[in-house]
Length: 499
View 1 (tube, one colour):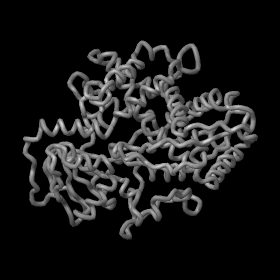
View 2 (cartoon, helix red, strand yellow):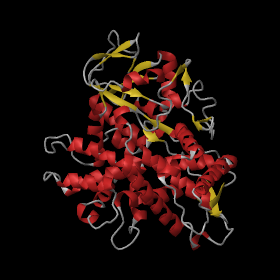
View 3 (cartoon, helix red, strand yellow):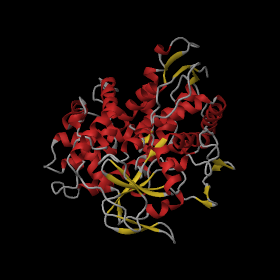
View 4 (cartoon, one colour):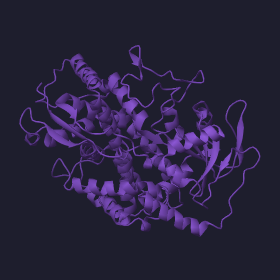
């Protein structure tokens, strides 16, 4: 991907090289423009965003502006300043950015256009169906679908005789299970069977699209990205209304969105399908790698794995349920909420693997107040960016930040929330899901389904990493987009536990 990106950015720089760059004004942060017109520092940032930002922080301080692919991005590196940025709702807006990037990436017309009056607000309200009481039914459905996939693909005869180990690639394993179980939970089942035909092909096409996702987010024209346009069309076509109408057990969230789209005669069927495809990406694009990292760290530390396994068994015992591998297990939302060590393990793996970028677009020229003493001048159209990975890896906040610690977020038998910087308690200390208006509305469901996936794994299987492998590392090429993928997949083996 890197050579292609270099070529594309080089072409863009030739086209836009004559555009005049800007100079720093009084009161503005230090300005780093780079020597390549338009491109600026995009290549250096793309190679390793965390290292790039840390080096510039040492040189320019905790606030600086960088030119990246034609955009001027002001990075706020001090987490103590995050609350002041997040509360700027009027002058700093997230929706301007997402309202342009999402339609470009997923192939539907902007919902803010005059052709769809009120649709943006109704779509925003629909996300409430991923929380509250609706979360309970979603969680129950996900548990059933996970057991369906596990029972048919990994708990049946194909796993082998009792005591036999089966060796597989961990990321591929997580992807195959979570992709289908999440799909069934969100979109429902075909009328004639419990599983959709061709799910493997759909997943393969999704992976091909996802590999190009960073370039689409950077708004590289899709016609420059090989077969990506054809693959996206194939994925969108899967969700055409006449196909979805025959599916049963569709989630309330997806049903509500379908009802909204039907209210607009100006919305084509292919546009409705593209919206549904976008939700598929939002549902699994970050959840799958999050499952991988949580699984990897637990399997890497057998003692931690046993602690979490026993915690799950104890939660079941509280309800008088004696676990047996012959029966399907059920974990309610209330039971999942009590899994303190499992949640700490997930949060710790998210801290180590997440590299989301919280962005806002300045709506006017104004003085951005950082605290009671400091403010900086920003210009209309500039992007204000928080990059929490720098906070997640700060040794002052997290001792030995590169190390996975099962109990990192546990203190005195409850969740630990006290983390400090410069002697001051941080309001925001872990931010894998964004912040403020840009916080992921499906974050509670995502945590629940990761808990369910791991619970089933630990209850039904013995798990071991294959020997002779190097330690898994994050691929920084998707920095800014959420949970990082591993640079290479790892092999593990599993067998049925005799319980």
